[in-house]
Length: 138
Image 1 (cartoon, rainbow, N blue to C red):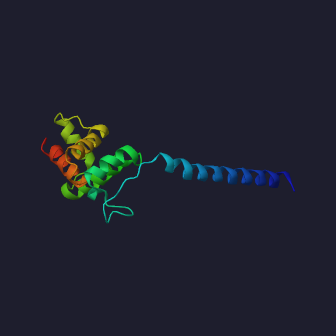
Image 2: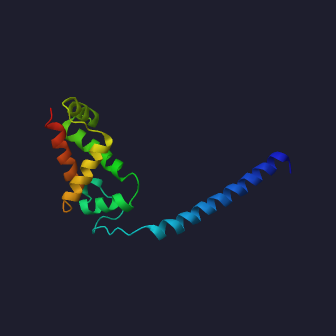
């Protein structure tokens, strides 16, 4: 066995051991600390983020994936573009030029506040409420 083959073999063994440790820690640590979110009937798989009930969205912010706010903002960008034929950047820039002061945090905080105040609504309603605030400042 030459030196190159020996290095390859060692690296392959190290990678296999590392992958096993990562897989095991993901399976054990991830499940022990997470609180279960009970989704309404019909929300299995990958749901349309605009149809997530606000009470579920609020729970997801606490115990769900870190990108939950960003996911809704991304969905909102597509929704608003389809409704207004203008990008989120254009809407925010115009609103900010009128003195609104929107930022990523302010936009996503709006979704959170709306959902906390209207737990019976769906996230699409929070986006529609934001759209009203962005477009009335023109």
